[in-house]
Image (cartoon, rainbow, N blue to C red):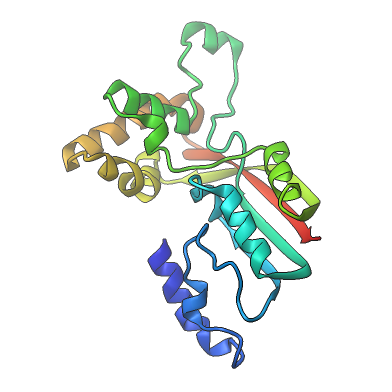
Length: 219
């Protein structure tokens, strides 16, 4: 993710006015933003990045505050509370199978725990509620103008393929699993969430994303 972001920044570097920084300025990992530049920005926009900043979400907000002008805007979208949790609920099926409604994230953590891994340590995602993230923004110099959670059904080719994009490298290979173990793991998770995430014929596979969207102004 970081490598592709840097490549995009390099492609855009020609559009940055002279004396207003360079692509290298844009390549700092989230949470490692310089405390100050020799200039300030009018706005910072982020999409689908902050939910990967589990290590220090407050550090990210403080870093953004450090590079904004007073009155500058911080606008973003990220995964929020209940992201990737199955939404099909039926009391009759719950009675038949208490594990029928395990969300994708919970299924991954449970499968890790059954194998003896520290699921909390390996889980790379940060999905805050509106209350939690609003409090973080407010306590670090921002006035929150808007914050909301928006469910968004996201079709995928399969839960296995989705895991190849977002779970294989950041979690399974990091845990030290070999190729065969990774494939077995991803197939197991897909079966665990089949009741929630498989429509059968019409929709196919899908995951219920929940996006946290916010707009805040630096005081």
